[in-house]
Image 1 (tube, chains in turn purple, green):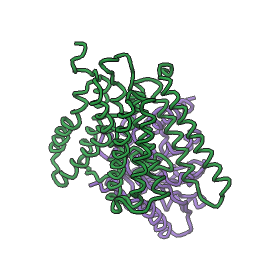
Image 2 (tube, one colour):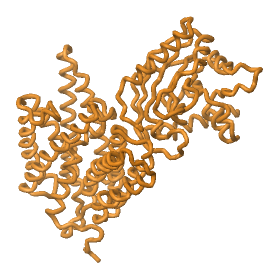
Image 3 (cartoon, chains in turn brown, orange):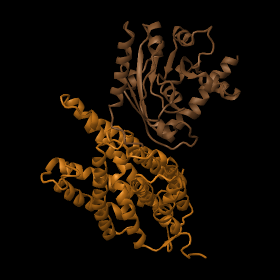
Image 4 (cartoon, one colour):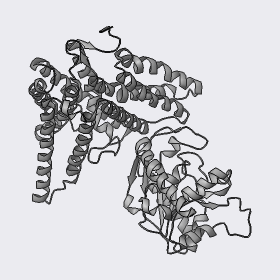
Length: 217
Length: 324
């Protein structure tokens, strides 16, 4: 019952607010949308510029798939107050991750593995934090662990530009900009951690180089 | 729905545009079937986008005056957003950009209030003075002149210039206050501007040889330009008296203004795109590019045609003394 209410909240939030907002206030230019996974389990790897990154990626999927899509987000940030916690966990459906790894009993990535086992689509930002807006940071290797634990799951790199200008870290005022979202070809775990990270990083920088973005400094 | 109060001329004109689109669709589909060797995908996309644009525009024009104003405000918003997404901007100027966006609802509020005096100075004077103030309050001086110059240039082109089309909608003549000449004038301006774009393109493609502005727009030729001017002026001469309050002579002159102005608006935006090294200004309209690619000519024809009309008749607007 509660779960249905939450799912309804999520559906209404995306259908009535997020999608019209994306369409009217921002505007999306999505390249190679057909490369997005049509069903789970799958992993989307994206660069992180803004709080809106995860919900923007979620809004690319059909509404019926919404409850299968789980963005991984930092527990220390989103569990600060009960209302934010409820919104992040129940309406958006984040998979909380313990960045500080306070709890030694539970493996920090176990939640992600379980979600993939359930056939869900997991969104991961391997830069770890939003960092410098519109600058591609170094990917952390946690993503390689997840790929290794789930070698049959495809990993789709997605490059996003624009949200770091529209709503960067530390800003509450939204300034409209068109967003570019480039979806890359998927890759899988092939048995070598360094090679996986190199391929992923190369795909990502390749996507970033697909367009010339105006300076933002 | 104020379709009933549209003059029969406007209705006939809209129906003819629909007929032209049907014809264009039939021709393109026939070409695709008959000559499968040639890739006409982008042409088909272009025609599809024409259908969408014409449909949205027609609905916005016939539903009600306020919906039409809202429609033009939204086009200005899309154009300014595309412009600001295209040019180099400074991180520090996010708040300045926000104020630039706020000019849109205000500019269209003045139009709604029929307040010509404020409409005509708000962006060139008040926004021109306000945006630098907001920028010096932030205090970043490196790149200052480029930043303030580009933001205000975009605001003038995408909001100030385009909003003149919307102001046509609320005009009332002193000697015929019950008449609504705006819908016909806007249709005339927008359709003639787009018609001129197509004519210059077709003349240039079929007969063009010597280039007119090779450094800015290598595809444009003298034949395209002159062919467009002649065709558009003749078409305006025929359509104007039927669709608008302009007589034959005024329509001819309006056609000349629209065809020459449209060309300059087009190459002005071409120069901007060449400077930024992009082919299209965006990807909003499949086959055409971005919104700026479609309304580039209108940024020039809109204020030029507006003032031509404004000076040719005696108008009643808020604050002009009529009826006080």
